[in-house]
Image (cartoon, rainbow, N blue to C red; front, side, top):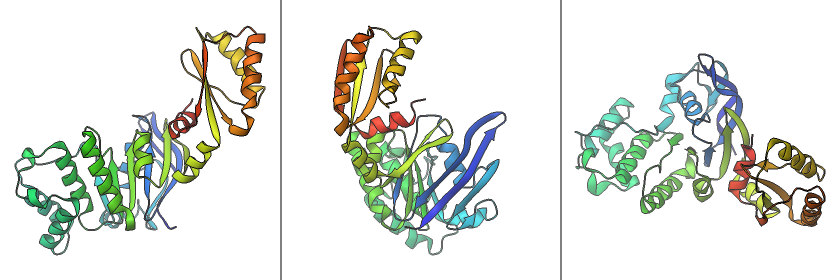
Length: 308
């Protein structure tokens, strides 16, 4: 599969603050990649670099083999972008707004292209309504419509379902999926369920660094072969945490700590280790309140990736 967007060792700083650090990641043609991370992880900065809004301090970015720094205008012609806080003009109708966007993008046959995207995103019956009259869900449809005007090869969507009700979320997800057959779509979110619902690939960023990337199906296959085991303690001070960590690591496992609990991921064929760990805890006076065993989920993988 062809990689349309490629970042190589990209770093971006705001003064002395490092927003993203030496990240390398790629996005495939005809695929939806969930770009996943907590708020402030570096998702928006990365997307603004891809869209030529920001220049990186170092590293290279390519879109369809074009160097973004050397060909910003040509790259913009390949790009559709829906920012998180989508700016709209309340005093314009949908039709007038999309015509304005088409003209700004220097699209040929403006009226034909506007009618095409209106039909595609399902807002034909609303095209003469003012933007101020639309629900949040329909405003998001307009946002996606402006992003796909000009038939771009790359579509970047920043939190496209944020603030929508469940019915609207389902509609927008279906719309995004329908657009993906010949596009490279980068879907920024902090919700793992959203990534599982519509994405083909995932890239997880945390504190400005790529922590995990891969195909959703491969990651799901990994979850089917593993379990997550959680122990809850009455308290976990630093001394006790150190003892627990050393004990768990004796079994070749790496614990993830929360306030008064720990979580470990273990292969299904090594489940007998849990009994041995339980016995070791008691033998060393590390008494826990309960232990909970569940199938590993994609959310567990996400938490594992950002466990620092």
